[in-house]
Amino acid sequence: MKVRVFVSLKNGVLDPQGRAIHHAIEGLGIHGVQDVRAGKMIELDVDASVTDDQLETMCKQLLANMVIENYRIERLAA
Amino acid sequence: MSFSSAVITFPGSNCDRDMADALEKVSGTAPHRVWHGDAELPQRLDFIALPGGFSYGDYLRSGAMAARSPIMRAVVEAAGRGVPVLGVCNGFQVLTESGLLPGALLRNAGMNFVCRNVALTVENNQSLFTSGYTAGEEILIPVAHHDGNYFADAETLDRLEGEGRVAFRYAEEVNGSARAIAGVLNAGGNVLGMMPHPERMIEAEQGGTDGRALFESALKALVSA
Image (cartoon, each protein chain N blue to C red):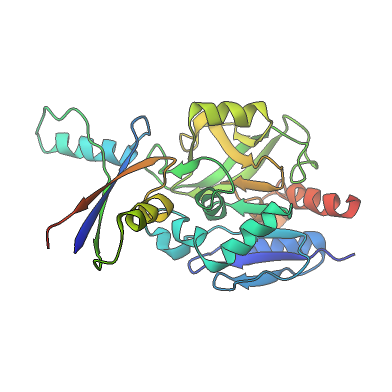
């Protein structure tokens, strides 16, 4: 089963990378983008034996840094 | 009495030799060199150093992989027993990732890698790492980092400041760090993380000696203990 973990910076945490991307978008001549926040997506291929609790543990202890980041787990249909 | 120290090397560490050299020059004893995959530290250590570099290529987040390596369990355990632990640059990132220090180190606010000598203010000269400085003293120490922008929530920052756990502050704008924090101590005062590199300011040939007092302080703390 494929699982996607989306990791994003918490609100209030400065995202200089997002800001630089924002500037670059404006450089394309496209206006109207109010804000850009960059995150990461991690795709895992897991056995059926991997529990929800184990996924949460992976996210909390490794994939996201809970001081600055949030995560969201998305299970993809096989 | 000999000063028994250890420098941990992770894959991608690149300041481990500088750190080992500084420890040997100041203490007169060469440190143990410990590999990240080792499960145990040498017995009866007086000092543990986590050096700068780009452990595991900064994959996932700076310091994230190193913080979960086998040796870090032993380092966390030693820190809990009161063994002094110094993390410089990537070592600081490893300390926050491992939970030994609060907060996190974000990408520099200006997005640029910053590599230059910067002025620091010694905020707390009561710790075992900083007793050789005077409070409010300004020192010159190099930085070389991309992810040095210290972040913690306001409550944590207030607590750190209230408890005297801000060891060093930048005396100039460097990377956007919250409250210009350059180095923080743990609650016990035996773990220090800092982005600037004191091991690169040990002798005149390096352009200055302002980093020397940090290692001398730790040595003095041991001798008087």
